[in-house]
Image (cartoon, rainbow, N blue to C red; front, side, top):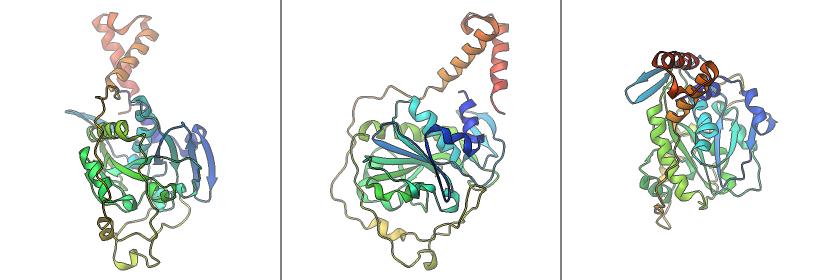
Length: 314
């Protein structure tokens, strides 16, 4: 796998993303919208609680990125900007700021487009949460695709209920978020991706309707609710929100119909990171020896591989 794109997403300042789409400067930082004329909206936040140069180690059937607090949520941003498109998953994209302060710039997003549903990759491990979009129908649907459904506190999609469609926050394989020791197991990232690929393939053209939840005036925080620590970053400008729906209410919604996976044909398009590496080797071989990598003598192949690995972050 070529890690250049991932390294770039993990280390670029927010300003580097502003040219990718229509950028609106809000009271809480930039909001960037990329219109791909797609039926599904993918969301990710660019702010983070701390920054460190990412480290990488290869493990058996896994690559670990570690000591990298900005994995939350730059790993998710990499997923929606680079991985999904290569796998043929077409989405409009919304990139936000100030999520870590509880004031995601998603709150300023207005559109006349009608999305079928939304997704985000801003969750530890491999579980999925839906916040106020949660109901029995959606839980049943996700479990048909082997998603582990849990409860969560807050992310960008919580600000987008007015769009009138369901939204899912998928685990993206990071752990220890909001700490200097934050790490990600990419084996978990790919495991979730394969499920999302199947879900998108079967349901991207189906509208999953949602009615916006009306929150009570009493703060759930003041009732001994979720203990969420708010983090203030360079890109964050004001205090976090403190009103959440009690978790018990999320399980009381009545199921109106049974949703089943459509079981269309087997998906053949996947994110092929081995081909990504092979393309890089070919480029180096052409640049250094003006010939294809497979035609090189073994000693020259070793040199090319050394050049390739030197280009990856360590």
